Amino acid sequence: MNYRHIYHAGNFADVLKHIVLVLCLEYLQRKAGGLCLIDAHGGAGLYALDSEEAAKTGEWEKGIGCLEANEATPADLKLYLDLVAPDLAGRRYPGSPLILARSMRAQDRLIAAELHEPTFEALHATLKPYKNARAMHMDAYECVRAHIPPKERRGLVLIDPPFELKDEFNTLARQMREWKKRWATGLFMVWYPIKAHLAVAELKEAARELGLRRTWVAEALVRPRERAGSLNGCGVIVFNAPYSVPERVEALLPRLKEAMGLHATAAEWLVPEI
Ligand SMILES: C[S@@+](CC[C@H](N)C(=O)[O-])C[C@H]1O[C@@H](n2cnc3c(N)ncnc32)[C@H](O)[C@@H]1O
Image (cartoon, rainbow, N blue to C red; front, side, top):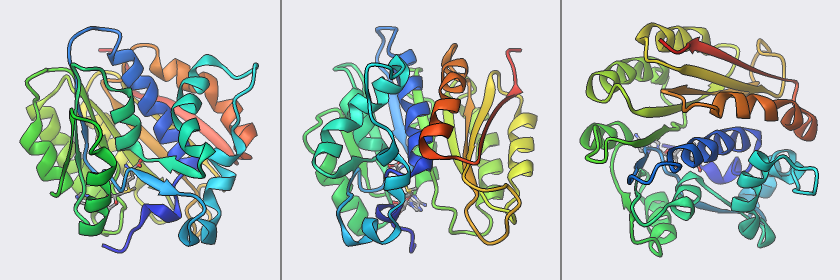
């Protein structure tokens, strides 16, 4: 377990993932019933952008560093920017568990898992002020298995592995089938990297074959998809995508492309409404 998100916090990939996350949550919260939010690969929850690690890659400067709210900012983008603004002012960037914890209502709860011990300690400290949020020192997929279907019957699961393991794409395809058996109506979000040698097409095919309604994917590319030896982009697959969220994200993609100087963006339905 060598991956440390501090090197990448606030980069283009975090921006895409966190926008999709925020819009999904906003839609789910339009109903009063409580939500169960599961962040299976939590990370530390908060990252210092002026740390040596973040400065070493400078990734955030080409990501969140390029996005500033002004009068012309679309409301959906502002929703996300307003959530991260308090941290940015202090040269920090919030991870997904903190974004979720901050957005929760009294009736919602958050379970965030993290396996790497020091990162778990950091996550635990980050979530401490939020009484409905719980950091768990456990494996992501075990955590999901232990908590779905949740008693609330509504909520979301974020899967955001570091992809250090060679067979992570196969693991994901297997896990997806298990999630369908356990909670076919659950909103699952799966983040994945785009690199020339990775089986991205197979992963999307596995998602399509699963046949869960409203399976949708959005991608952001910083380089041509087939360039060897680099991270060329990333994508987010959403199962049971809430109404309006795909269209709202798609409306923001040209703006994100321009602001962050992306090579390209893409979005498609893998399984539309059945
Ligand atoms: C990409 S980072 C998470 C970033 C976070 N979701 C966010 O958006 O702010 C992936 C995290 O998963 C953790 N991790 C790796 N393998 C894990 C596993 N099997 N179970 C739980 N966490 C794991 C890593 O230590 C790392 O902190």
